[in-house]
Length: 232
Length: 232
Image (cartoon, rainbow over all chains, first blue to last red; front, side):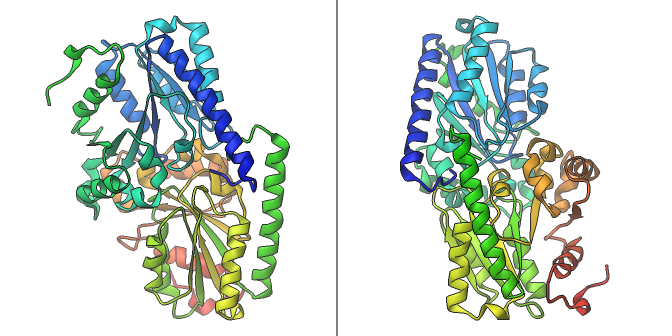
Protein backbone atom coordinates (compact mmCIF):
# COMPACT_ATOMS: atom_id res chain seq x y z
CA UNK A 1 0.00 0.00 0.00
CA UNK A 2 1.05 3.64 -0.16
CA UNK A 3 3.21 4.69 2.72
CA UNK A 4 1.58 7.60 4.48
CA UNK A 5 4.65 8.53 6.56
CA UNK A 6 2.46 7.71 9.55
CA UNK A 7 2.11 4.12 10.77
CA UNK A 8 -0.85 4.92 13.08
CA UNK A 9 -2.76 6.46 10.19
CA UNK A 10 -2.13 3.36 8.06
CA UNK A 11 -3.48 1.14 10.82
CA UNK A 12 -6.57 3.36 11.15
CA UNK A 13 -7.12 3.28 7.40
CA UNK A 14 -6.97 -0.52 7.26
CA UNK A 15 -9.08 -0.83 10.42
CA UNK A 16 -11.84 1.42 9.01
CA UNK A 17 -11.74 -0.56 5.77
CA UNK A 18 -12.03 -3.86 7.66
CA UNK A 19 -15.07 -2.67 9.61
CA UNK A 20 -16.75 -1.71 6.34
CA UNK A 21 -15.83 -5.10 4.83
CA UNK A 22 -17.41 -6.90 7.78
CA UNK A 23 -20.62 -4.89 7.33
CA UNK A 24 -20.67 -5.72 3.59
CA UNK A 25 -20.19 -9.44 4.36
CA UNK A 26 -23.07 -9.31 6.84
CA UNK A 27 -25.33 -7.95 4.10
CA UNK A 28 -24.27 -10.70 1.68
CA UNK A 29 -24.85 -13.34 4.39
CA UNK A 30 -28.31 -11.94 5.13
CA UNK A 31 -29.18 -12.59 1.45
CA UNK A 32 -27.35 -15.97 1.20
CA UNK A 33 -25.05 -14.46 -1.40
CA UNK A 34 -21.46 -15.65 -1.86
CA UNK A 35 -19.09 -12.82 -2.76
CA UNK A 36 -15.84 -13.59 -4.63
CA UNK A 37 -13.17 -10.86 -5.00
CA UNK A 38 -11.29 -11.35 -8.30
CA UNK A 39 -7.84 -9.74 -8.45
CA UNK A 40 -4.74 -9.67 -10.70
CA UNK A 41 -2.36 -7.51 -12.68
CA UNK A 42 -3.88 -5.63 -15.62
CA UNK A 43 -4.45 -7.96 -18.56
CA UNK A 44 -4.21 -11.30 -16.73
CA UNK A 45 -7.70 -12.15 -17.98
CA UNK A 46 -10.21 -11.27 -15.23
CA UNK A 47 -12.92 -10.02 -17.56
CA UNK A 48 -12.72 -12.86 -20.08
CA UNK A 49 -12.83 -15.31 -17.14
CA UNK A 50 -16.04 -13.68 -15.90
CA UNK A 51 -17.50 -13.63 -19.42
CA UNK A 52 -16.99 -17.38 -19.79
CA UNK A 53 -18.20 -18.05 -16.24
CA UNK A 54 -21.41 -16.16 -16.99
CA UNK A 55 -21.83 -18.09 -20.26
CA UNK A 56 -21.43 -21.39 -18.39
CA UNK A 57 -23.32 -20.79 -15.13
CA UNK A 58 -25.77 -17.97 -15.77
CA UNK A 59 -28.69 -20.35 -16.43
CA UNK A 60 -28.40 -22.07 -13.05
CA UNK A 61 -26.77 -19.54 -10.76
CA UNK A 62 -28.11 -16.03 -10.27
CA UNK A 63 -25.07 -13.75 -10.63
CA UNK A 64 -24.41 -10.01 -10.27
CA UNK A 65 -21.13 -8.17 -10.84
CA UNK A 66 -19.54 -5.22 -9.07
CA UNK A 67 -16.98 -3.96 -11.58
CA UNK A 68 -14.10 -1.72 -10.46
CA UNK A 69 -12.09 0.32 -12.96
CA UNK A 70 -10.11 3.53 -12.59
CA UNK A 71 -11.87 5.03 -15.59
CA UNK A 72 -14.18 3.81 -18.40
CA UNK A 73 -16.95 1.19 -18.35
CA UNK A 74 -15.25 -0.95 -21.04
CA UNK A 75 -15.22 -4.09 -18.89
CA UNK A 76 -18.67 -3.44 -17.43
CA UNK A 77 -20.07 -3.15 -20.97
CA UNK A 78 -18.52 -6.51 -21.95
CA UNK A 79 -20.28 -8.17 -19.00
CA UNK A 80 -23.62 -6.42 -19.52
CA UNK A 81 -24.05 -8.45 -22.71
CA UNK A 82 -24.95 -11.39 -20.47
CA UNK A 83 -28.05 -9.57 -19.30
CA UNK A 84 -27.16 -9.54 -15.62
CA UNK A 85 -26.78 -6.62 -13.17
CA UNK A 86 -23.33 -5.04 -13.58
CA UNK A 87 -22.63 -2.18 -11.20
CA UNK A 88 -19.67 -0.13 -12.43
CA UNK A 89 -17.51 1.72 -9.91
CA UNK A 90 -14.94 4.17 -11.28
CA UNK A 91 -12.21 4.46 -8.65
CA UNK A 92 -10.62 7.55 -10.25
CA UNK A 93 -7.06 7.78 -8.96
CA UNK A 94 -7.53 4.96 -6.46
CA UNK A 95 -5.53 1.81 -7.25
CA UNK A 96 -7.97 -0.66 -5.67
CA UNK A 97 -11.57 -1.08 -4.55
CA UNK A 98 -12.16 -0.53 -0.85
CA UNK A 99 -15.08 -1.60 1.34
CA UNK A 100 -16.71 1.83 1.14
CA UNK A 101 -16.83 1.72 -2.67
CA UNK A 102 -18.25 -1.80 -2.62
CA UNK A 103 -20.85 -0.71 -0.04
CA UNK A 104 -21.96 1.81 -2.67
CA UNK A 105 -22.26 -1.06 -5.15
CA UNK A 106 -24.31 -3.11 -2.68
CA UNK A 107 -26.56 -0.09 -2.13
CA UNK A 108 -27.21 0.13 -5.90
CA UNK A 109 -27.90 -3.62 -6.10
CA UNK A 110 -30.34 -3.39 -3.19
CA UNK A 111 -32.25 -0.47 -4.65
CA UNK A 112 -32.50 -1.73 -8.22
CA UNK A 113 -33.10 -5.45 -7.62
CA UNK A 114 -34.25 -7.90 -4.97
CA UNK A 115 -30.86 -9.00 -3.59
CA UNK A 116 -32.29 -12.13 -1.96
CA UNK A 117 -32.73 -13.54 -5.49
CA UNK A 118 -28.96 -13.66 -6.09
CA UNK A 119 -26.57 -16.55 -5.32
CA UNK A 120 -23.26 -15.00 -6.28
CA UNK A 121 -21.62 -11.58 -6.59
CA UNK A 122 -18.28 -11.30 -8.35
CA UNK A 123 -16.26 -8.19 -7.48
CA UNK A 124 -13.79 -7.52 -10.33
CA UNK A 125 -11.06 -5.41 -8.76
CA UNK A 126 -8.77 -2.81 -10.37
CA UNK A 127 -5.87 -4.45 -12.24
CA UNK A 128 -3.06 -4.36 -9.69
CA UNK A 129 -1.13 -7.28 -8.18
CA UNK A 130 -0.20 -5.33 -5.05
CA UNK A 131 -2.77 -3.06 -3.41
CA UNK A 132 -6.16 -4.83 -3.73
CA UNK A 133 -4.91 -7.76 -1.61
CA UNK A 134 -4.69 -5.51 1.44
CA UNK A 135 -8.23 -4.13 1.25
CA UNK A 136 -11.02 -6.59 2.02
CA UNK A 137 -14.32 -5.59 0.49
CA UNK A 138 -16.63 -8.09 2.22
CA UNK A 139 -15.78 -11.13 0.09
CA UNK A 140 -16.07 -14.73 1.27
CA UNK A 141 -13.06 -15.78 -0.79
CA UNK A 142 -10.29 -14.16 -2.81
CA UNK A 143 -9.47 -15.32 -6.33
CA UNK A 144 -6.11 -14.25 -7.77
CA UNK A 145 -5.09 -14.65 -11.42
CA UNK A 146 -1.49 -14.90 -12.61
CA UNK A 147 -0.87 -15.08 -16.35
CA UNK A 148 1.94 -17.38 -17.54
CA UNK A 149 3.29 -14.34 -19.44
CA UNK A 150 4.06 -12.61 -16.10
CA UNK A 151 6.86 -15.03 -15.20
CA UNK A 152 7.62 -17.73 -12.64
CA UNK A 153 9.07 -15.41 -9.98
CA UNK A 154 6.00 -13.26 -9.32
CA UNK A 155 4.65 -15.21 -6.29
CA UNK A 156 7.98 -14.59 -4.54
CA UNK A 157 8.19 -10.92 -5.54
CA UNK A 158 4.57 -9.98 -4.75
CA UNK A 159 3.83 -12.30 -1.82
CA UNK A 160 0.89 -10.43 -0.25
CA UNK A 161 -1.55 -11.30 -3.05
CA UNK A 162 -0.44 -14.93 -3.15
CA UNK A 163 -0.62 -15.30 0.63
CA UNK A 164 -4.19 -13.93 0.72
CA UNK A 165 -5.60 -15.93 -2.23
CA UNK A 166 -8.03 -18.79 -1.60
CA UNK A 167 -7.97 -19.82 -5.25
CA UNK A 168 -5.14 -19.08 -7.68
CA UNK A 169 -5.78 -19.31 -11.40
CA UNK A 170 -2.72 -19.63 -13.65
CA UNK A 171 -4.15 -18.14 -16.85
CA UNK A 172 -3.27 -18.16 -20.57
CA UNK A 173 -1.60 -21.57 -20.38
CA UNK A 174 -2.13 -21.83 -24.16
CA UNK A 175 0.77 -19.35 -24.49
CA UNK A 176 3.19 -21.48 -22.44
CA UNK A 177 4.74 -23.18 -25.53
CA UNK A 178 5.91 -19.76 -26.80
CA UNK A 179 7.48 -18.74 -23.48
CA UNK A 180 10.46 -19.92 -21.51
CA UNK A 181 8.25 -20.87 -18.57
CA UNK A 182 7.59 -23.87 -16.35
CA UNK A 183 4.05 -23.98 -14.92
CA UNK A 184 5.16 -26.49 -12.29
CA UNK A 185 7.73 -23.94 -11.10
CA UNK A 186 5.00 -21.30 -10.75
CA UNK A 187 3.00 -23.74 -8.61
CA UNK A 188 6.05 -24.53 -6.45
CA UNK A 189 6.68 -20.80 -5.91
CA UNK A 190 3.02 -20.21 -5.00
CA UNK A 191 3.03 -23.10 -2.51
CA UNK A 192 6.12 -21.64 -0.87
CA UNK A 193 3.99 -18.59 0.04
CA UNK A 194 0.63 -20.32 0.53
CA UNK A 195 0.84 -24.12 0.89
CA UNK A 196 -2.89 -24.89 0.88
CA UNK A 197 -4.26 -22.60 -1.84
CA UNK A 198 -6.33 -24.16 -4.64
CA UNK A 199 -4.34 -23.81 -7.87
CA UNK A 200 -6.07 -24.17 -11.25
CA UNK A 201 -4.07 -23.71 -14.46
CA UNK A 202 -6.45 -22.77 -17.28
CA UNK A 203 -6.92 -21.17 -20.66
CA UNK A 204 -10.05 -19.20 -21.44
CA UNK A 205 -9.04 -19.50 -25.12
CA UNK A 206 -8.87 -23.31 -25.36
CA UNK A 207 -11.23 -24.04 -22.44
CA UNK A 208 -8.59 -26.16 -20.69
CA UNK A 209 -9.12 -26.11 -16.91
CA UNK A 210 -12.30 -24.02 -17.11
CA UNK A 211 -14.56 -26.76 -15.73
CA UNK A 212 -12.35 -27.13 -12.67
CA UNK A 213 -12.83 -23.40 -12.11
CA UNK A 214 -16.61 -23.61 -12.57
CA UNK A 215 -16.70 -26.47 -10.02
CA UNK A 216 -14.69 -24.42 -7.55
CA UNK A 217 -17.13 -21.51 -7.95
CA UNK A 218 -20.11 -23.82 -7.41
CA UNK A 219 -18.44 -25.29 -4.30
CA UNK A 220 -18.38 -21.79 -2.80
CA UNK A 221 -22.13 -21.17 -3.10
CA UNK A 222 -24.22 -21.09 0.06
CA UNK A 223 -27.12 -22.31 -2.03
CA UNK A 224 -24.89 -24.97 -3.57
CA UNK A 225 -26.56 -27.38 -5.91
CA UNK A 226 -24.31 -30.39 -6.33
CA UNK A 227 -26.10 -31.31 -9.56
CA UNK A 228 -24.30 -28.35 -11.17
CA UNK A 229 -20.89 -29.91 -10.62
CA UNK A 230 -19.29 -31.06 -13.85
CA UNK A 231 -17.22 -34.23 -13.97
CA UNK A 232 -13.61 -33.40 -14.91
CA UNK B 1 -3.13 5.89 -5.20
CA UNK B 2 -4.69 4.72 -1.95
CA UNK B 3 -7.53 6.89 -0.75
CA UNK B 4 -6.73 8.11 2.73
CA UNK B 5 -10.25 9.41 3.46
CA UNK B 6 -8.58 12.81 3.76
CA UNK B 7 -7.92 14.91 0.64
CA UNK B 8 -5.64 17.38 2.47
CA UNK B 9 -3.45 14.53 3.70
CA UNK B 10 -3.17 13.16 0.17
CA UNK B 11 -2.06 16.55 -1.11
CA UNK B 12 0.54 16.81 1.70
CA UNK B 13 1.80 13.32 0.94
CA UNK B 14 2.28 14.06 -2.76
CA UNK B 15 3.76 17.49 -1.96
CA UNK B 16 6.34 16.02 0.43
CA UNK B 17 7.20 13.39 -2.17
CA UNK B 18 7.61 16.04 -4.88
CA UNK B 19 9.99 18.10 -2.72
CA UNK B 20 12.12 15.00 -2.17
CA UNK B 21 12.05 14.23 -5.91
CA UNK B 22 13.28 17.75 -6.70
CA UNK B 23 16.16 17.31 -4.24
CA UNK B 24 17.08 13.95 -5.82
CA UNK B 25 17.04 15.51 -9.30
CA UNK B 26 19.33 18.31 -8.08
CA UNK B 27 21.83 15.69 -6.92
CA UNK B 28 21.71 13.88 -10.27
CA UNK B 29 22.15 17.21 -12.12
CA UNK B 30 25.13 18.11 -9.96
CA UNK B 31 26.81 14.89 -11.16
CA UNK B 32 25.61 15.18 -14.83
CA UNK B 33 23.66 11.97 -14.37
CA UNK B 34 20.46 11.26 -16.33
CA UNK B 35 17.90 9.34 -14.27
CA UNK B 36 15.24 7.24 -16.03
CA UNK B 37 12.30 5.81 -14.04
CA UNK B 38 11.21 2.47 -15.56
CA UNK B 39 7.64 1.40 -14.74
CA UNK B 40 5.09 -1.23 -15.76
CA UNK B 41 2.82 -4.04 -14.57
CA UNK B 42 4.58 -7.07 -13.10
CA UNK B 43 6.09 -9.23 -15.84
CA UNK B 44 6.01 -6.70 -18.70
CA UNK B 45 9.77 -7.15 -19.11
CA UNK B 46 11.52 -4.34 -17.19
CA UNK B 47 14.41 -6.47 -15.93
CA UNK B 48 15.15 -8.21 -19.24
CA UNK B 49 15.05 -4.79 -20.93
CA UNK B 50 17.66 -3.50 -18.49
CA UNK B 51 19.77 -6.66 -18.88
CA UNK B 52 19.92 -6.17 -22.65
CA UNK B 53 20.52 -2.43 -22.30
CA UNK B 54 23.48 -3.11 -20.02
CA UNK B 55 24.82 -5.70 -22.48
CA UNK B 56 24.59 -3.16 -25.33
CA UNK B 57 25.68 0.10 -23.68
CA UNK B 58 27.74 -0.82 -20.64
CA UNK B 59 31.05 -0.42 -22.48
CA UNK B 60 30.38 3.19 -23.47
CA UNK B 61 27.96 4.51 -20.88
CA UNK B 62 28.61 4.34 -17.14
CA UNK B 63 25.39 2.97 -15.64
CA UNK B 64 24.07 2.31 -12.13
CA UNK B 65 20.73 0.80 -11.12
CA UNK B 66 18.38 1.52 -8.24
CA UNK B 67 16.21 -1.57 -8.06
CA UNK B 68 12.85 -1.50 -6.27
CA UNK B 69 11.07 -4.68 -5.24
CA UNK B 70 8.59 -5.42 -2.47
CA UNK B 71 10.65 -8.41 -1.33
CA UNK B 72 13.62 -10.43 -2.65
CA UNK B 73 16.69 -9.31 -4.59
CA UNK B 74 15.92 -11.63 -7.52
CA UNK B 75 15.96 -8.81 -10.10
CA UNK B 76 18.93 -7.03 -8.48
CA UNK B 77 20.93 -10.27 -8.67
CA UNK B 78 20.15 -10.63 -12.39
CA UNK B 79 21.52 -7.14 -13.03
CA UNK B 80 24.58 -7.54 -10.79
CA UNK B 81 25.94 -10.04 -13.33
CA UNK B 82 26.86 -7.03 -15.49
CA UNK B 83 29.33 -5.88 -12.88
CA UNK B 84 27.73 -2.48 -12.24
CA UNK B 85 26.42 -0.92 -9.01
CA UNK B 86 22.92 -2.25 -8.27
CA UNK B 87 21.33 -0.77 -5.17
CA UNK B 88 18.38 -2.90 -4.05
CA UNK B 89 15.51 -1.29 -2.18
CA UNK B 90 12.91 -3.58 -0.63
CA UNK B 91 9.70 -1.56 -0.33
CA UNK B 92 8.01 -4.09 1.98
CA UNK B 93 4.26 -3.46 1.77
CA UNK B 94 4.66 -0.31 -0.32
CA UNK B 95 3.37 -0.59 -3.89
CA UNK B 96 5.81 1.89 -5.45
CA UNK B 97 9.14 3.60 -4.89
CA UNK B 98 8.88 7.11 -3.46
CA UNK B 99 11.45 9.90 -3.46
CA UNK B 100 12.53 9.16 0.11
CA UNK B 101 13.43 5.55 -0.76
CA UNK B 102 15.34 6.66 -3.85
CA UNK B 103 17.16 9.28 -1.74
CA UNK B 104 18.37 6.32 0.32
CA UNK B 105 19.60 4.69 -2.89
CA UNK B 106 21.44 7.88 -3.93
CA UNK B 107 23.01 8.01 -0.47
CA UNK B 108 24.37 4.47 -0.93
CA UNK B 109 25.65 5.28 -4.41
CA UNK B 110 27.40 8.39 -3.11
CA UNK B 111 29.10 6.58 -0.24
CA UNK B 112 30.22 3.50 -2.16
CA UNK B 113 31.27 5.08 -5.48
CA UNK B 114 32.25 8.40 -7.05
CA UNK B 115 28.86 9.44 -8.47
CA UNK B 116 30.41 11.98 -10.84
CA UNK B 117 31.75 9.02 -12.85
CA UNK B 118 28.24 7.88 -13.83
CA UNK B 119 26.23 8.95 -16.90
CA UNK B 120 22.96 7.14 -16.28
CA UNK B 121 20.91 5.78 -13.39
CA UNK B 122 17.97 3.51 -14.16
CA UNK B 123 15.36 3.25 -11.40
CA UNK B 124 13.43 0.00 -11.84
CA UNK B 125 10.15 0.55 -10.03
CA UNK B 126 7.84 -1.98 -8.32
CA UNK B 127 5.65 -3.81 -10.87
CA UNK B 128 2.43 -1.83 -10.79
CA UNK B 129 0.71 0.02 -13.64
CA UNK B 130 -1.10 2.40 -11.30
CA UNK B 131 0.70 3.81 -8.27
CA UNK B 132 4.33 4.47 -9.38
CA UNK B 133 3.15 7.02 -11.98
CA UNK B 134 2.00 9.36 -9.21
CA UNK B 135 5.25 9.38 -7.23
CA UNK B 136 8.18 11.16 -8.89
CA UNK B 137 11.52 9.95 -7.58
CA UNK B 138 13.80 12.58 -9.18
CA UNK B 139 13.88 11.14 -12.70
CA UNK B 140 14.49 13.20 -15.83
CA UNK B 141 12.15 11.02 -17.87
CA UNK B 142 9.60 8.27 -17.30
CA UNK B 143 9.69 5.05 -19.31
CA UNK B 144 6.55 2.89 -19.26
CA UNK B 145 6.33 -0.66 -20.62
CA UNK B 146 3.12 -2.31 -21.81
CA UNK B 147 3.29 -5.94 -22.90
CA UNK B 148 1.16 -6.96 -25.90
CA UNK B 149 -0.24 -9.71 -23.66
CA UNK B 150 -1.92 -7.08 -21.45
CA UNK B 151 -4.43 -6.05 -24.13
CA UNK B 152 -5.26 -3.06 -26.31
CA UNK B 153 -7.53 -1.31 -23.83
CA UNK B 154 -5.04 -0.73 -21.02
CA UNK B 155 -4.02 2.86 -21.97
CA UNK B 156 -7.68 3.87 -21.68
CA UNK B 157 -8.28 1.99 -18.42
CA UNK B 158 -5.06 3.08 -16.63
CA UNK B 159 -4.56 6.57 -18.07
CA UNK B 160 -2.32 8.07 -15.38
CA UNK B 161 0.73 5.97 -16.32
CA UNK B 162 0.26 6.59 -20.04
CA UNK B 163 -0.25 10.34 -19.56
CA UNK B 164 2.96 10.64 -17.53
CA UNK B 165 5.22 8.53 -19.79
CA UNK B 166 7.90 10.19 -21.93
CA UNK B 167 8.72 6.94 -23.68
CA UNK B 168 6.33 4.00 -24.06
CA UNK B 169 7.73 0.59 -24.94
CA UNK B 170 5.26 -1.96 -26.32
CA UNK B 171 7.03 -5.17 -25.29
CA UNK B 172 6.90 -8.87 -26.25
CA UNK B 173 5.79 -8.11 -29.83
CA UNK B 174 7.10 -11.57 -30.76
CA UNK B 175 3.96 -12.95 -29.01
CA UNK B 176 1.55 -10.85 -31.11
CA UNK B 177 0.92 -13.63 -33.70
CA UNK B 178 -0.48 -15.84 -30.92
CA UNK B 179 -2.82 -13.17 -29.55
CA UNK B 180 -5.92 -11.46 -30.84
CA UNK B 181 -4.19 -8.08 -30.69
CA UNK B 182 -3.54 -5.12 -32.99
CA UNK B 183 -0.37 -3.18 -32.08
CA UNK B 184 -1.57 -0.22 -34.14
CA UNK B 185 -4.69 -0.10 -31.96
CA UNK B 186 -2.53 0.02 -28.81
CA UNK B 187 -0.63 2.98 -30.30
CA UNK B 188 -3.88 4.76 -31.21
CA UNK B 189 -5.18 4.28 -27.66
CA UNK B 190 -1.91 5.56 -26.17
CA UNK B 191 -1.95 8.67 -28.42
CA UNK B 192 -5.50 9.40 -27.28
CA UNK B 193 -4.11 9.85 -23.74
CA UNK B 194 -0.67 11.27 -24.63
CA UNK B 195 -0.35 12.50 -28.25
CA UNK B 196 3.40 13.25 -28.25
CA UNK B 197 4.88 10.30 -26.35
CA UNK B 198 7.69 8.32 -28.03
CA UNK B 199 6.34 4.84 -28.78
CA UNK B 200 8.74 1.97 -29.50
CA UNK B 201 7.36 -1.54 -30.13
CA UNK B 202 10.06 -4.08 -29.36
CA UNK B 203 10.95 -7.64 -28.45
CA UNK B 204 13.82 -8.39 -26.11
CA UNK B 205 13.59 -11.99 -27.38
CA UNK B 206 14.09 -11.33 -31.12
CA UNK B 207 15.90 -7.97 -30.74
CA UNK B 208 13.33 -6.20 -32.92
CA UNK B 209 13.10 -2.50 -31.95
CA UNK B 210 15.89 -2.71 -29.37
CA UNK B 211 18.25 -0.38 -31.26
CA UNK B 212 15.55 2.31 -31.39
CA UNK B 213 15.33 2.00 -27.61
CA UNK B 214 19.11 2.20 -27.16
CA UNK B 215 19.15 5.35 -29.34
CA UNK B 216 16.40 6.91 -27.26
CA UNK B 217 18.36 6.18 -24.07
CA UNK B 218 21.52 7.75 -25.57
CA UNK B 219 19.52 10.81 -26.66
CA UNK B 220 18.61 11.39 -23.01
CA UNK B 221 22.21 11.53 -21.74
CA UNK B 222 23.61 14.86 -20.59
CA UNK B 223 27.02 13.61 -21.63
CA UNK B 224 25.57 12.42 -24.92
CA UNK B 225 28.04 11.05 -27.40
CA UNK B 226 26.42 11.04 -30.83
CA UNK B 227 28.92 8.43 -32.03
CA UNK B 228 27.05 5.90 -29.88
CA UNK B 229 23.87 6.27 -31.92
CA UNK B 230 23.14 3.19 -34.01
CA UNK B 231 21.65 3.54 -37.48
CA UNK B 232 18.25 1.85 -37.60
